[in-house]
Amino acid sequence: MALIGCTLGTYGDIAEELAKKKKTISPRVGTPISLLCASTFIPSTSEVKNRETYGENLRIMEEFNRDKEDRISTHTDVTNSTVDAIAPGIRNQLHVFRNVVNPTIKDLLDKINYDLQNISNQPISTMEVIEWDLPTPYYNDKLEDLSSRYSEHGTVEVNLTDIAELPSSAEILELFTTGISSLDDDINKWLAGMDENYLPNLWKKVFMSSESLLRIMLDKDLGQANALATYLMAEKLVTHEPLNCFKVNRATFTSRLGAIRDFAGKYVFNNIKKNKDQIEKNVLIINIIKDKTYVHSVVYNEWLNSGGSVEILLGNMLSNNRITYGKLLLDNAQPLINKWNSYYAIEKQVRTNLQISNIRQSIEKNFITQINEARIKIRKNESCDIPSLEECDNIEKLFKQEVNRYGGFNINDLPKAVTRLVCRSRFYKTNAETFLTMLNNIINDNPELPIFEASTVATINYISEWVLTQVELK
Image 1: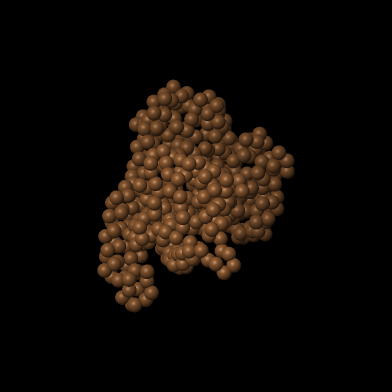
Image 2: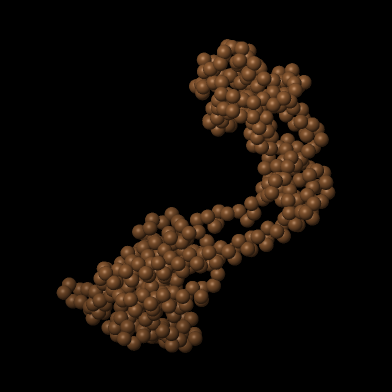
């Protein structure tokens, strides 16, 4: 009752406002609403003095029009006839919206999204800052103690040869147990973060191929890890019984493994010393290669705490004279940040313009593909929502006009844009755009609402919109 009271009150307010402005709402001649009005007494605006009078008139009309046994009022008869006439048309419209228009739009969106799937995920810039650090065991004093005995070893290259077969993963892992608990913990943490194929692949390089051990130690990505793993395996093998997978006699085994251990041990020790020296001297930037800046993780964290930022390093990569020292970077922080911000803004605009162009090209290409598919169906006399080849040509013409009229496109606005373009060209003879726009707005505003309920609300709103087209203000 509260809702009815509110509605009557609203109608009363509207009536009062219209009366003040000497305006009336009248049905358009020849519309279903005009027929209903012709069969019903409706007080004119001038007769409505207040809300109570209006409400009383409504009560009288309701009483008059209520069916009494076998009597049906003229208004009720016209209402039933109107509903019978209109309902099939509404149902047919909704059927077309849901089963023809909407699937066509969805198919077009799927094809466009397939074309554009990588555009929105591409970064504005490929420049990046990469933190570098030694494997965890390198920071353990026990590893430094073990490897220090090889610090004076020469740098004579070790040429590897095939001396073993591939043992089981468990046998390889056993070689990384030193018996020093703190070091073993660090080794286990390090290996847990490595790819499961890392150790088998390294074993093949060191013990099953003709390879340069120096090249393995100096690998740009895994050099320090290779040195550590090779040293630990060789150390364990030399000091314990060799695994059954080795194919050489004891003398050859001892000679080969001793050379590998000594060489790898020296590189482990050198890596430890170099790392300590870099930290002590606050060497921030290890290297700058093309669009990547490699920074020492330990020094980098301290530098960030002192006021450093990624933007400074990115701006530094854009400079002709690149700075490698952390303090000097901080001294030139603002100019470098400005350089990066300017570059980013320009690149972002370029990417936006490219995105707009790519979206439009994809929409046009895939829409024409749909129309060409329709042409094929028409030529084969197959069922199609487009009646003729001439209509296909007309739809293409309308589509091009709408695309040119639409303006800029973007990823976030894509569903709305495609709905508008398709409805105003391929389905220009229907009210599909009105209904689907209502439905999408209801879904967006009420995401928790089930789709069938959202569709019901959209249908009610759609019918209300249709009714409003049948009245005019005079």
